[in-house]
Image (cartoon, rainbow over all chains, first blue to last red; front, side, top):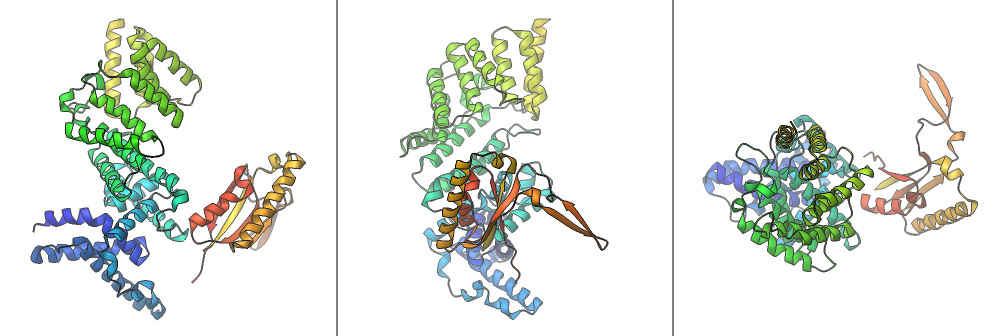
Length: 416
Length: 116
């Protein structure tokens, strides 16, 4: 087998093998170092012997032995025989743990819930999840969030220290706290996706890897915790948004608005999967979750033949449902944009004015962008130009800046 | 593990509260303390006198400098603490959330440094 084949297997198994190793050795850092040792051993042996029938069990067993070596070396180095009573050494004979499928699934959930523990800051939860659950390298995580490698390494180190020192448990939350904790996990996954779907800053509109990682993570969660509407809803939402990927930007990286997208470029297979999941999510017990309703909105866009024939009244209605179950000014903004398609731009502009007067979205790029578009459609070109200028000042993303500048130039030509 | 739960509250606002509310608050504290004594989590706990009674001491180059008032001027002040024994941070946070002042002030949860 080629090094590339091996690297693919290692990447696929990294998260799960690490999840089990952390439980067995009781320490994030020791588990990570030992898994790296096991990877090195795999790269050395597998090209000759072929990969083992169960690569994950192999990695866990080799990793655990490497961890024992590390503890013994440390104990010898310090001359402390007492450390040999480390729990790990006492459990050396327990080899069952690596082959039980259910236990392995639980380990993965333990890892996910630990990385997304609310005692860690949100950006730390995201970084730790990408590093340990998704198996990205620390420099990859740093690049994804435009943070320096040194700063990211420090952030990850501090997070692992806090897990150990503050007693963040390596456990799946019990029934009483599961729902709010799961919401936290889904928020992390959605944040990873959103950053991949429309980066907050930089040269490129989309960062494919992050969107793919988020979908992979949500699929994993759906398989580990089957039948939960909020997980299926989020997975559907991400699949349906991501299905439009090829139509959302030109080859040169310019933004293409939904109304101008070539719908033949949309990924129909992925849309079909998303539509199926939306139905499951909406039918799940406990009433529809906000993600399921957002996915239902995305489904209406995905089903529509074109922009004009989209079921705007139902989309506006779904935004109203969303405002009841999960109110937020951003949802109000989206609702107003849908109302513009149902009742016209003047009525939508009144909603935006009211929203703006409350001051909660002050300086928000999309507020300026929606306002600019409504004013443009109402023929109020001077005011639209001002709003586009505000949007240009507010955005940190180069393709968005180019789009607003293009609209502004069109309007300025007409006003002259 | 042991955790220190530090209770922060705005003293000025607390001083303005109605006596009936203060009475109820004090009863809630008695009930809460009893509950964590019974559950075996309680190690220690005290209420502190207001910051008007605080004195801060520093020693620099052998000289003791004493100043009137707390170490730092903040909007909310340390007003009391519990030292608890808890299985992990989740258990500690659940106990902290039941402290009556959690509803009006804030509880900072810190693990105790253990020397091996």
